[in-house]
Length: 77
Image: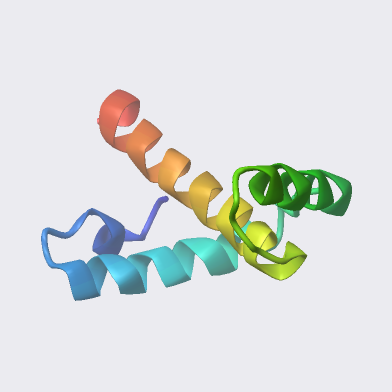
């Protein structure tokens, strides 16, 4: 989060750029397990949604980024 002021912007386009930077940084230390993604695909199918493993992996990575941002906003300022 350090050095990534864009992610805290009020402008949506700037926040997207900030998320891209955060996702690039996360790639070094967060890789969701594929077996969990496969299980999520099955659970989503049970709910009537058709998703693939690639979409679920993208969701897991992005949800981790959102959690990091919200945690920082809530607890670190």
